[in-house]
Image (cartoon, rainbow, N blue to C red):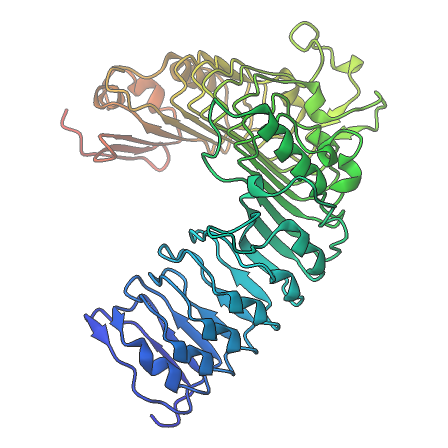
Length: 509
């Protein structure tokens, strides 16, 4: 044991103890119980120290003696402070402090960790981050950085200006941006290594009484946070400005975000119109969540186009998600789409590579745009879209999931559909939805060679009993190549396969 170099331990005991191991280089304690951390300072040759678990409540001053330490991981612990001796760890490269629920303050000595590469403090309720982070010019991954103008007692704290000096950043997650002064110069546009960016305001910071001045200030802050063209991954969270930043406008977006692949907009609650994202040439994943001010999405979402046949909107998009847009009612892709559906007059192409669309908790949306039939969508999920009445003419669609869509009346012209999942557990429903019966009738009327279609149903007990052999819906179910139905939180089931024949249920007739 005296020459042991690496030790990893887990324990269910009330406490554990670590003996003195003078040659130990790596110590990992996963979800440990209470631990006498004083012994850690004696392990002078440690390079890697991982202490995880809510019974870890303090870190001794002697941790500053571990001058060879490269990685310190204290995530998911209940530590309430870190000693100033932390600044003695001049070789430390990774400091991981996420999800430390009792940690409010970082020691000022953290600004002495000149070799630090990673700083992760996400989901830790820090009051502020000390001023001087900008001196750590080796940082390339910063997650959960708190921005402010001053600390609780007037301390100097980290502000956006310090980002100027961090030239090696490749990942940056900044929080509390509403606390930043709007009088800043561009601090991100020259970061040639930056690939992932998270820009976040404080959740629940705003309410219906938000002042116009606050909205204007946060817009100015975001205007100055223009990312470099090399950015690939962008998340904007809890932005409460009345418009999106200038670098997301129609005249700038193709230049400022020309390499963007992944874009998420969460709770941008005061922007009534989405940016013209269809112009982004490399975008593959787009998620828009909580855009509560949006009532209509029209052709402007695709971006400006001059009517030339070669013009393509969303040329590489593969996944499109709309979530929690409670006031969204209309979606169109072509001007006058409801009145004019002549494809020949509309040379614009859109979504040539789109595979998946998810629409989740958008209760007022009335219809899918007709222009979607031009896209080769393979998977569609509609969940909690209460007013949607029709899903049709999606000839490439292979998978469809319908959950709690009360007004749905018609599902048709889905020639390639292989999987249909229907969830409606409302105990008041005594029968299958009429649109589902009609859809199964249409399938039965057509010949399907090498049919791989499967139906997954979660419904009320009475509706599922109607699918049993000899009951009212059996004539439709028996034509389905593969069927599985559940009720009562999947405690009751019916399983059926047409060929080779298989029938099993635990439902009492």
